[in-house]
Length: 209
Image 1 (tube, rainbow, N blue to C red):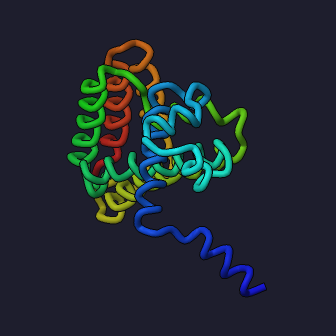
Image 2 (spheres, rainbow, N blue to C red):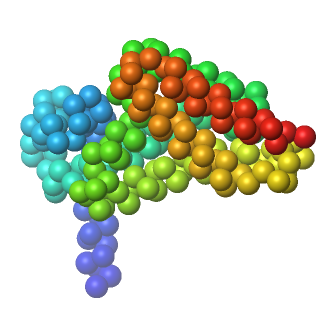
């Protein structure tokens, strides 16, 4: 049994070149699924975009579902790393406003196209792919925790009233962000996003001591 487990681990242990190839496939799939949607992105499309053979794709992913799950994880990590590159923590009103401005600016640069990479996957997959929905839920929870951590830090420093429910504020801010991104995509203007985020930041600010 131990030898069998070791064999399985060895099979899934990738070389540096293997890691690079797998990453290139996932990155290409993420790009296409963001632009075209999951249903409209075929394995052949990914093969062409990543410049790999079909056998290479199926070496790393037994089926498209596995590739989609890898894309969800990839997009979650990408979104969170982008957030953290803007501000290490959302632990002050200044940091929250910087974060707000950067998100609005990004949508302007994208010409209000695409919406949220994770949200787009969620709207397409949540009702039809239970495994994907679980991965998406975990991704959103990581994002929510990032927001909550900053608010909790403000509260610990005595800057945010103890009357503020940081769990609910974090969830409300993420919910507002997702709705704002969706309406921005539909209306092709950032006003819905700006109004929503400004209203939530004003609400959070009302708890500042």
